Amino acid sequence: MPRWWAGPASGLPGKDKRKLTNKYLCVHGHFYQPPRFNPFTGEMPREAGAEPFHDFNEKIDAECYRPNAQDGNFELMSFNVGPTLAAWLERHDPETYRLIQAADRGHVAKTGHGNAMAQAYNHTILPLANSNEKRIQIAWGIADFRHRFGREPEGIWLAETAVDYETLCQMAKQGIKFTILAPWQAASGIDTTEPYRVFTCEGEAIVVFFFDHDLNMKISFDETQTINADYFASQILAPRVNWSKLQRGEPELTFVATDGEVYGHHKPGRDRFLQYLVKTAAPREGFDVVTLGCYFHAHPPLHEVHITDETSWSCFHGVRRWEDRDDCAGDQNDWKKRLREALNGLASRLDAAYQQIGARFARDPWEILERYIEVKLGTKTAADVIAAFGANPASPEGAALVTMMESQYYRQLMFTSCGFFFDDLDRIEPYNNVAFAAKALELARAAGVDDVEATFVNGLEAARSWRTGRTAKDIYLDIVSHR
Ligand SMILES: [Zn+2]
Image (tube, rainbow, N blue to C red; front, side, top):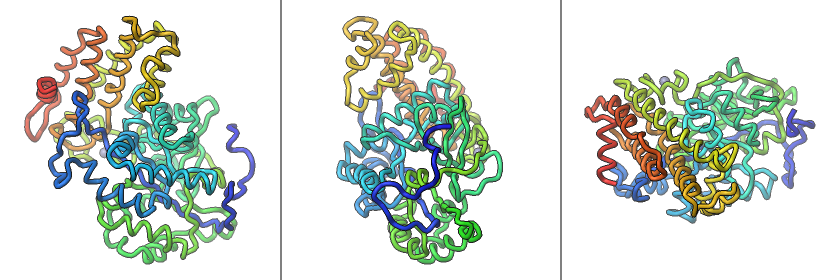
């Protein structure tokens, strides 16, 4: 049994000595944007529909990230900011970025636990990824978090909360203690007001917080329920509390987890609703507003549950939305399946080539790649990273290794879930994934990996937009002719 389960629940540790009521509320916001840059120029193209802003990152920053940060909302909730968004904020809105970092630091100082969670690096649907990819996604997500928040993450957010046991096992092995899932991802009935322990592999376990789906729906989509936070707290939150549980002295966590962009971008004004709810209205109804980090330590799970492999929060058919024709997206043909087949084929050739080159320097070449994220974070040079494995970038083998790690970086980006989320191929999101694939392929070729392009391009031809008739091959040729 891992050390962190041991011992009785003892209330909030650290300096916060408030008396606890056993009636808790936590609101989690998943803040995320996909990588929007052109991998050949590093620039962000102007995006139609974002006007008067240059692109959607700028637009959503103005409507959501900045106002929420300035109003102190990040301090009032549990949150994760995806690495690709965090990197953008760091560069384009450093003040907002610093406020978000400070929110987590403030919680650490006050309670001993931060309120930020990490995110699997690139918003990949992990049940559809191979074992090495899962491992890299989690390792890079943890490293990115450590760099930005100056501490080890305790929790990690999975893209679309898509999960399987292999993913949970990787998380546990890498020191992650908890995650968030939808209630239907449990294999049996659960009570969303308490966390559960899920055994993963080799005696490891992860704690899962299941969100309250009905509250999520009301906050995300139902305008009539969120006009007045006092009404919401007294008429919606308060009546849901199970009084017999409270009378038995059992803690009860009301837990909401939504996209962070709900607060101000998808729904103008909902950032102010959030603030009033967690700051004033819910405490007035007796709710102690907590973070998952604090709750996890104060009230370890009492029960175990099994999860259902290949499930997620935004597809009711498992993870089919990101791999095949699916009703949730309204797909009209099988372009996702064809595109994914082509990308999977490319990925396995790139992985084999990387493994071959990396095997000269490490028994486990993926360990070198795990550390490569330091180069992208600007904390190490590629020479430093490979020198630790006895490789020299001035040698042809060392240079090839560095180039293949850069190729692997884009090979990870080409599976960004947003490329498979919507109903059609001929959109910016799948276009970006194909562009990342083109970049990964170009780098691999520079490292001497040949005979990969023809098969890949043939595969792309089978993926066709039902709206415009363009194929993924057309998109690929358009990208490589403009690089
Ligand atoms: Zn579905």
